[in-house]
Length: 352
Ligand code: PMP
Image 1 (tube, rainbow, N blue to C red):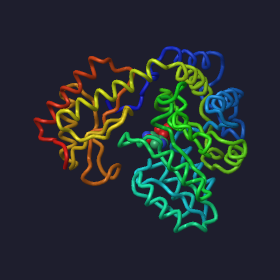
Image 2 (image 1 turned 90 degrees about the horizontal axis):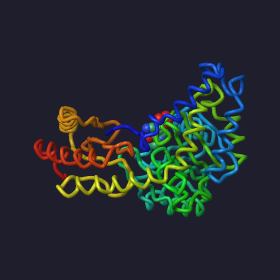
Image 3 (image 1 turned 45 degrees about the horizontal axis):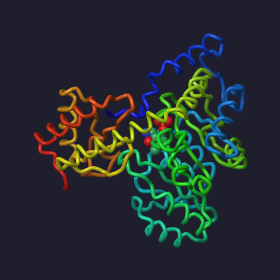
Image 4 (image 1 turned 180 degrees about the vertical axis):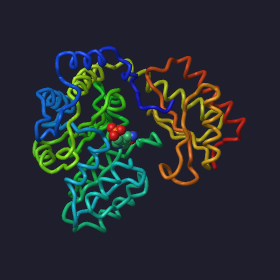
């Protein structure tokens, strides 16, 4: 209960078959070079067109991973003299992208729009302003305040970048993500998604305007100076994209299961975030207590690792449960009961 295979697609036979077919028909085991040298293949364009259609935007760019996408995109869009406004608990790859960019890193308190406004005001005259956020936060499972972020970006003439690593595939009629559900996708200048989570494969994409994608193709160093994804991985992603769009049932079941699972924990007094994302953190407090909890869960047949500082702030060590459409209802009901029992036995309680 700690993986990110939210729709259970990593075991889907149609994806593995697409990958096997590509290998069997001569795709080779590797791309052999960066996309700008000789690593490009027609399948890349096919996938990028399909992604742009899915995201209802002009253009898309496939990257090697979510980590390299964030590092490459932020450092291509911001530089010395610019300011990147970033939620304090954004993913490490966003933080590293900002460091790499040499722009000023203006961290705002988690989901605190007043603090963000104060920072935007303070840096009003900066050359370029980029606001960046996870759509669903990876270790807390709560959602960004995307409507307010869109308003602030318009008011201050900033760019808005949203990382849908943990929401892509899960929200929207066709899994387009949280930005579409909230109707702010047109305000998002840079949209990032990964293929490593709900898609069950590996890799990532950026989508947005044609100008953005052309700029990134020429400026994003993690794209330019790194070997392209192997062609059979692209074949797997192409198949996964079709499946993700059609996974209406899986999305519905997962959202309902997430709400039920949260309620089961909260009803016995544990502290967690509200919402319907499949990421359900259970705060244990100190490192040792989270580790003890995780070990006891393991003995009971539940694989859920302890997340500790520096990944999360000191004193908020936790078990980050993540649910998948591949879990059965019985597994989740039984799992929640065991988690509650073990947590209570160990004295992990709410409210501190
Ligand atoms: N962004 C976020 C919000 C993430 O949680 C992660 C991975 N945990 C990434 C980016 C990196 O994605 P990838 O695993 O594809 O490198």
